[in-house]
Amino acid sequence: MKILVVGSGGREHTIVWKLSQSPNAEKIYCAPGNYGISKLAECVDIKVDDFDALTAFAKEKEIDLTVVGPDDPLVAGIVDAFEKEGLRVFGPRANAAIIEGSKVYSKELMKKYNIPTAAYEVFDNSADALAYVKEQNKYPTVIKAEGLALGKGVIIAQNYDEAAEAIADIMDKKIFGESGNRVVIEEFLTGPEVSVLSFTDGKTIVPMVTAQDHKRAYDNDMGPNTGGMGTFSPSRTYTDEMAQYTYDNILVPTMNALNAEGRTFKGIIFFGLMMTPDGVKVIEYNARFGDPETQVVLPRLKTDLLEIFNAVVDERLGEVNVEWEDNAAVCVICASGGYPKKYQTGYEISGIDAAESRGDVTVFHAGTKGADGKCVTSGGRVLGVTALDENLDKAIKKAYEAVGDINFTDMHFRKDIGIK
Ligand code: AMP
Ligand code: GLY
Image (cartoon, rainbow, N blue to C red; front, top):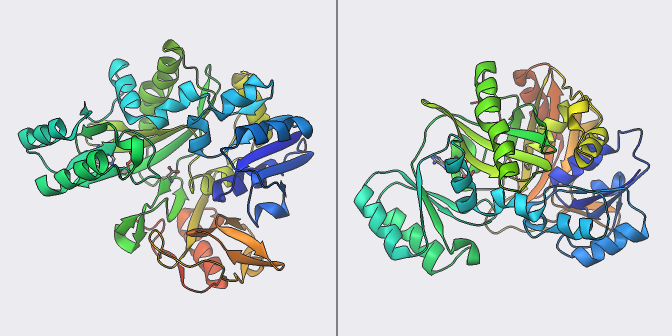
């Protein structure tokens, strides 16, 4: 099969890497890709939101399957655009990707179908939102912009002033643009978090092994929120009983709810969950693989990923036996100093080969590009260093040894990934 992967981050590098191991992957293209991806796939310089150019490319190269990584094109209807041209594509249509694109929609869906989540109210103007916060007078309180906001649209306000500032930023100053036309204000939940990604074709839903992200920039969960500074798999706290409860009360009901609403979901549903004292609850849905969750989940997959993607597209996922290694994985993100705020790029990266020569270590590229035959930094999150071992403690040790091989100017990484 000829395959096109859409995206350019560590998630897409991992997808390309896993697909390249399939005996049925004849040729892989990636649009636009990055330096690491260019070693496994032919990178083509087309942006992820240029649906006309992407579909024209897929036709010209007779692509058998296109796989979409990022959320923005999914929410904007890339799958619909490919299907309209008669092209096979892996991912949800826009009407299903709305579970990530609109937090108001996802909350209403959960309420209607009794899927456990935090209690909430929705507001379309800042005066009503403020009045509600004042009347509730309960802190912390959680304020969420309705739409996509690069993972930054959730504010946990510790008091009235912080809540008022968040509401003004989102709804009046529009710091996230149209994504802040409405806000969800919800009950603050407590407990460990876990990410459960799943494959679904709308008939069957198959959970993947669990993962846990570290969103803050610095050790001990200090500093600003980022796209994710590192992950590990499996979770240390999610029990088999919780997994069964989640499958019965969250995964299957979500798939069925979307079918009942005429929004059959085919692709990846990412369940952001919290293990609260009242049981597992949904914090958020994403309509795609997580980044950097993918970097610890797919390396543990035994089954051919291409076979799974094809089964989802053809709605026969129930026929595939999805199997996982009984091991552990840790991914440490090497970021540009200053990320997620201001940072410099263009620095040469050294030590990737040495890190990978350790065995069971793979360096997934996020923000890299080639310059005069060298690999240089080109983004905030630069590399994800993934190590596999028989348990988490060994995988953590191996990942940090490998990170020690890598160097570029101002490199920053957290030193506590997987420890808590
Ligand atoms: P989200 O973008 O919805 O995943 O939210 C980002 C982060 O905010 C989550 O990973 C949680 O750590 C936190 N969060 C979101 N909603 C809540 C909530 N209702 N209670 C406590 N923490 C929350
Ligand atoms: N790592 C969180 C996400 O991909 O949304």
